[in-house]
Length: 285
Image (cartoon, rainbow, N blue to C red; front, side, top):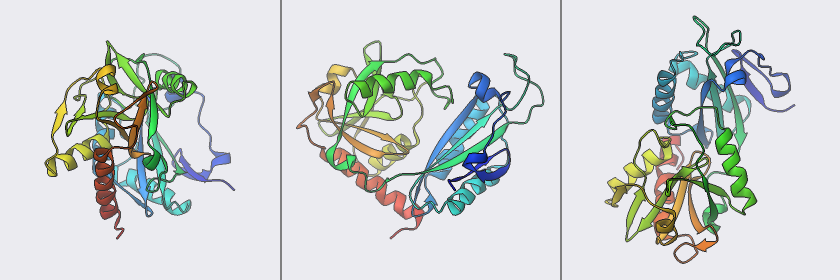
């Protein structure tokens, strides 16, 4: 018996989960998704999760498939049914099932599915060693601020990065780094965190939001501006953040050592600060 997943308002073994071939997520990528970390059997960063999901649904004019309370309830049930102590929960909302037509169907109930993945989030060995990134061309559409399930461009970019020996790909547009294929991108220079400002060019990362808030509370200077690949290679540090990695130091970009080539103090400090806040939210001593 594998995992218990949620689909079509039912909790079923993953082997029995079925989605209609007429679901618009399957036909058009017409939907959005979210990923929430779980530590100590508890979800963290729930408030910004709901806020971002609500925005993505609103931007695409997709109705909530249930109440926000029930949405979180599905997650809690999946944690319990799968005995998930640490990992993530992926959830996806699509416009629903309808005859194939490009225009939005009327009065079609949106659909929700979700599943768990066990991962080592707190004691991630990459946090100790640091990771390598490879720069790739940003081929995505112009509404990257929506957490769309249409991720083909990111998949292509991630594959190119992996083929180049990287853990992650940093996407580049007009000479400037936008973000990672599945993470937010940062560099550090003279004690300042530098990261691209929020526009429709990047996803409003939840970890990004939390980290910048924590940094401001600790009087760490922040510059929200564009930066080039060359500037990143010459930075004192670089790091990334995401739901499944929290904060990871970057030690190499395109084969060029970043800083000392070892995880830098800013990335380590931010990871420690984030973990402390996350554990407090999860009720872990």
